[in-house]
Image (cartoon, helix red, strand yellow):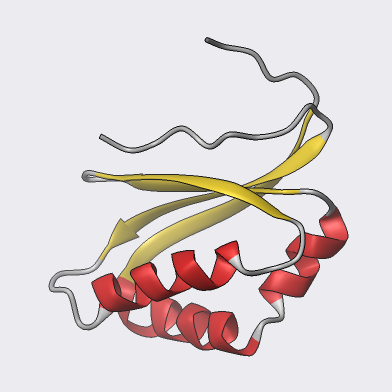
Length: 105
């Protein structure tokens, strides 16, 4: 079972990455683990939730749009993006949203 990210009081931002994978692993699993660990070290990172079935969805949470831009430009993340475009994803979509409300138990 995946963990639910422990986020602070809003507002904060969510980067929603939805994807369909290509066949085979081709180094994807190792890179995904590395990207999760690397993201967690970035300034402004708040947490992540990720699931993969036929459709994969990863939601990462960030303090600011500037923190998201910094992560997008990270050299290792850029390499993962390049490999994703070339070999891991048959389709994907990135959405960035401002979280205004957050509640649950």
